[in-house]
Image (cartoon, rainbow, N blue to C red):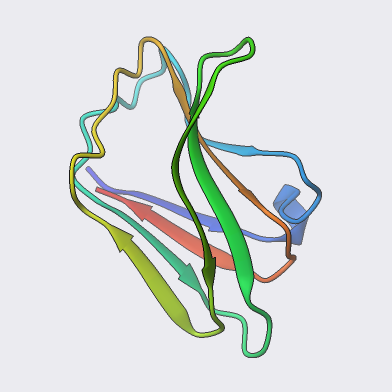
Length: 103
């Protein structure tokens, strides 16, 4: 089952606060094959950080990169994780709208 998530200023993107995509211990597991992050803004680049967070203080960065306007980042190599231990979260420095697809 795929997860589709639109991330925008309404959901807190660009505020410096992370947005949880997969919740630790939740119904959706960490057995994922790919993550696609699309910046569908016409003019703004987007610095994103995708990371695992244990709920206290440990953060493991999976990807940190700039996604140009109208571009998509696809991660599809060794990205499964133990969702009993970690949340999958995204952070960004921009209010450019993103679409995240997790399969």
